[in-house]
Length: 263
Image 1 (cartoon, rainbow, N blue to C red):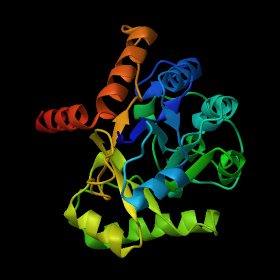
Image 2 (tube, rainbow, N blue to C red):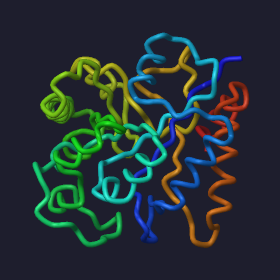
Image 3 (cartoon, rainbow, N blue to C red):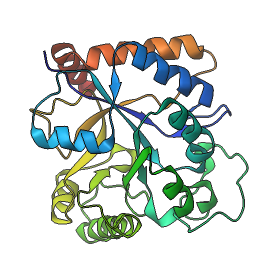
Image 4 (cartoon, helix red, strand yellow):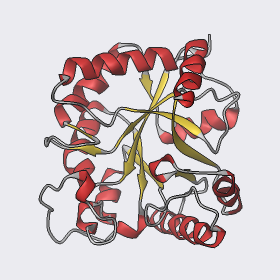
């Protein structure tokens, strides 16, 4: 039996209660739990290899993705990933990348972080390079731009600018992927991505990735970015297990994705 790939999505990793956030302790439990359930974490490079092969893997595979590139990923998340030897990919808002950190930011709720004036809340080039043994990096536009637009000129600027910065950081890189900010996209943005030299793009459409039939410019993912103090860790892990089981099972995953899309 061949399996769809489950791509898990995170945003913030820190010990504070907030939207789109999980604690380092819960992240560790979730990753260990996933491995114990028989899923194998793969690198971004391995995912690209499988995608290019056009064949679903014969084992249950999981890719961990992280959106936006916040500083807390380096401070709180990376130590967990390194300790557990979990590879991942982080999608960067490239206009926020400074060369090195002047000071460590104090906590600010996600909804209050500004992509222009709060660059200290995002990863620096120095921190990006420090994590590259276990983390790959790709584009999330230059400014967290909404790709569901008919403004082709702005799309071209955002996608070219972001790709150029990623290529500057990683000169050896020859395959470029993309992640739509807030999951917003349309046929024009997919077209411009191809014209700009991107090979695939990740969405926020929930589901597993059936490599043999998926749209490479609307790759499905599974959000595990938030936990609720009311529900607690046990509920979070139960929901994670349920999503992994459903979306790694071809028929169940397809039915669930279609149901979610209709809501």
